[in-house]
Image 1 (spheres, rainbow, N blue to C red):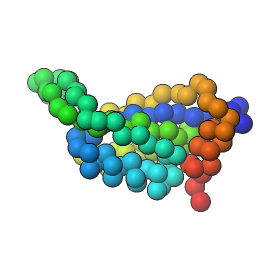
Image 2 (cartoon, one colour):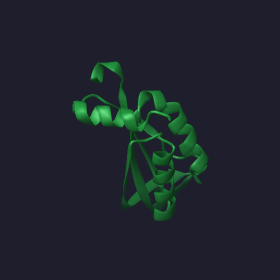
Image 3 (cartoon, helix red, strand yellow):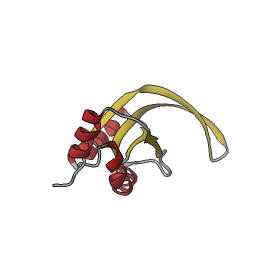
Image 4 (cartoon, one colour):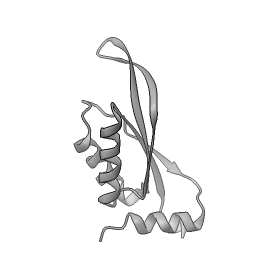
Length: 110
């Protein structure tokens, strides 16, 4: 099963728990993600438009298949309030066959 498709993990952050929860729910409902984990609050320190910022954020770890990647990115951009949301895609280089099968099933459009 693993050779037939590839899995990806996407991370992004939101400025409040409600927005993170809404995005996570929408991604699973739209079958763009099999699972979304919400971690937070975390503290992010970053430079934006020449100034150092320190903000609380909620991090989403999103599991999907590579065939859903483009639609997932588009949905995150649509749901996000940030001008330039963090969207990082990481390949999953290994997973149990059962989990991989489940994820493929959960992200197959119906």
